[in-house]
Each structure stands twice: as C-alpha cells, then as structure tokens.
Image (cartoon, rainbow, N blue to C red; front, side):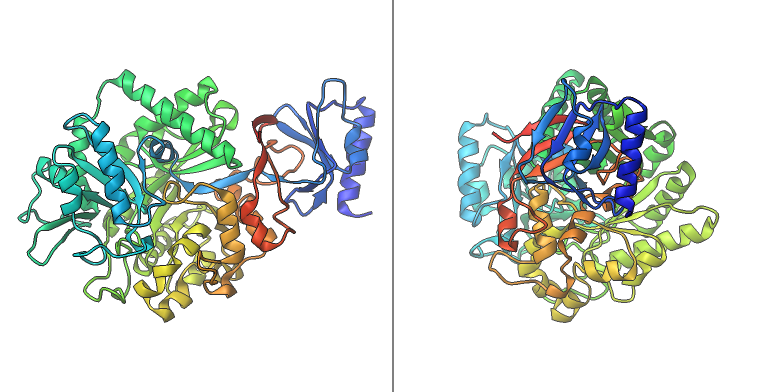
Length: 565
C-alpha cells in the first residue's frame, strides 16, 4: 500500500472510531493538486472550520458529508492551494485604484491626454497623481527625450496650476511637472542627493525625471500638504485596503507578502484585521529608518493575529533601484549608458546596521537588490552577519528580486540559505530592454536565472511586485513556465521551470519563505483551508491557454470569499 493510501486508510479508521467528524465544506469530483508529495493528486477534500480535514478519493471524502455540509462539485476542474503573492505592495495596490493608471499607455501622448482630462476635473492647486508609465514599453520615443525619457514641457503646458507626480512603473523614479518642481524649489542649482539623481538636459535643466531618492525632494512637498486628520487618514487606509483585498481575492491570492509598510500602516492593518475586515492573509515587512526600528521593533513582532490574517516578522530595506530607470547597481556600467553603473540607494553601513537589528530582535531581513553589484553587497552583508552569529540557524533571510546576479554569486544563495524572492512576470515584462541595458553575455549569464538558482539548491519564490505589475498570479505563473514575451519570443528558454515547479514557487515555497509552511502552501490535512479553483487546468492544458485561466473560487480558511459570476 502506498503512502497516500496508508494515510487515507488511517484517516477512515479514525473517522469510524470517532463516529466521523462532519465537514463544513467538501470539494469533490475534481483534479486537486495538494502540493504535498505524500498525497499527490486527489479527487476530493473536506474542510472543517478553517482547516483541511481530509483529502482523498470521492468515496473516502463522502464519509464526511453531513446534512449541513456545503458540497461543491468541481466537475473535473483543477483545484490548488491558494496562491501566495511572494512580493507585492498591498496598500500601493489599493492606492493605484484611486489614481491615474498608466500601465497600459502606448506612448507619452496618451499620458499627456490622461493628465489633461484629470486637470479639467481638479481644483486649482490639487495634485494629479498617477503610476505605471514605462518609457521602454512605448511605441515611440518622444522628441527631445533625454536617455529615452521625455521632458516635462508638454506636461507643464497642460497643467500650469496643478502639480503633477507620475510614478514610474518600477516605483523607482517619478516624473514631475514645472509646478511641482517650483513648489519644491528644485531648479538647475539643486544638487543630487545621496542615492538619487535628477535627470537633466544638455543645459543642466531638470527634465522632470527624478530617480530613486531624488524623488523625495518633490514628493515631500505633497506629503506635507496631505491630510493630517487621523480620522480621515484611517478612512483612506480602510478604502485602499478594501480595494487591494478585493483585487487579490478576485485573482486567487489567499496570502500576500507585503514588501514594506510603516509602523503606522501596520497599526491600521492590525485594527482592520481584528475587525475581520480583510480576507487576504497578510505577511508584512516593516520598512522604516534604523532609528525607528531600534525604538519599536520589540513591540511589533506579530504571528498569526486575527486567525492567521496578519504576521509581522520581517524588515525590508532597499540597496539599489530598478533596471528600467537605470537605477539598478551594477558591477560594470550599463551597456546603453556607459557613464553610469546605477545607484546605491542605501549605504552598505546602513544595511549592515539593519542586519544587526534583525539578528538582535529575531526578525527576517529582506533586502531589495536588482543589480549584480547590489546582490553581491547584500550577500556579503548576510554572510558576515551569519558568521558573527554561528549558533543561529534557519534564519531564512531573503533577497527581494535577485534579478541580475553575477555567475560567481549564484551558488552563494544556496550556500548561505538565502531565499531568492523573485517575480517571474518581471522577466517577460522587462525582456525587451534587458539586453540593451546589460548586453547579451551579462543577460544570459545572470538575468532571471530561476533554473540556475534551483539547480544550485536555493529556494525560489514567485510574485508580481504589484502595482509594478498586475497582481495576477496566472500571468506570473505563465511567465515562469514560458518566458514568452509579448512579441512571441522566448527569453533564454533554458531558465524556464516546469508546471509543477512553477506551482511550488507560488505556494509551498512562498509559505516556507515566511516560516509558514506548517500552515500554508499545500492542501495537507491540518493546514489552513486556503484553496483556489481554476477554470483551466494550468498543469496540463496547452501552454498558450494558461493566460486565459480564470479564478472560479477563492476560499480562505474554508470560507468562499470570491466566486466567479
């Protein structure tokens, strides 16, 4: 008798001895991937309360059906553990629903038209906010561009009295108009801050593009003018959380790893979770200054608050920027901009101090590193911290993104037990300009090298970095198995993963990376009943049909929180 049958027989025996515990929910007549090698694929499962009660054949699970059991006939559909968004920005996702969405614009002219429409509806002096533009994804380069970025002239002309802030898709650059720069008193004499850069034209005038920490020179003006009424701030947080939660459940996300929130935001999330106002389970990294971390970390570690809907046990730092804005910190200059090797946005000394705080307070450390220089520096920081505390084991520190890594550093992830928290959708989204930025050899050697990481023994996870990309796990899953770009080409196909590997990246690996594999990531009896039912079988359908897959059910803790119309 194989292991699964033995476990099933034991379950039935215990059920018979106890008079059989009735299930609250049963899924039957399906193709259910448990992502647990002991059970493999099953036909049915039973849920009691918020936990998986049993898995097995229809006949085995029928024993748990009572008069009050909600029975769903899957009719052969695929069910999987709930998707775990491995790296995203939860409140930013909600906020993006309230501002101009520029993700799908085809060119700068469309951006100008959208802003002009918003200005016509705005009060004089009101800020116009938007996010999602990416100059490398437009169908043409605007005349007079600098490094491929347009200048602010057209934007300033249609919005002379309203300051405008348009955040780059990556989140690592902002575009401001003349009004916004004037309010911030930024001009040709303003110096670049550490870890940031004001892009300038041939005459030394700001073009409107502010990379990395330079954006704070203008954004702080908007922040100072923002509503400081605590009640209205809480109401706004409630609204953006509601929008983010709805979007996640619609897309089949049952757990969301938030890549950096302030102490104030965490306070608000905790309040909402304790009210039962958030369906998605949140695992949150704290993002604040070392001074604030030192003062408050001791009182912010939370595990499983609100029936496992909020956990706070990690710190987030960023050591460089993004490739699209040429802010990723590289060992060698950019191929398409030899005068630059990117930006170091937080000093090595500062991140080293954060590592010390993480060790002292038993927090995971998660550091954003995209360029090969950034990844090397972070690995060095981690290695030294581990060497200084040899008795500490299984820390599961993470590098967020790990997009472009030198060949010598790829095996270090496994050697140091560092998790590569990656986002497959970045690969296919960024592919059109990666070779231009890095050159053919560097791109092939270390860009989005999932298989190289996995073959070396490293743990890899998946996500979307939303709102940088659509939060859809189906799109990122497809990117990991196909590496197919919009034009149909495949970006270095040897790094593709197979379909079950891709499912593991989005489920059990995500749970492991958050110390939650004992309660999440597989449909194992005793674990939380977080389940997604799909319209297509992403494990077996033709590859081209994967992107068409819809979410039929999103079930969190045994409760159906989304059902397709």
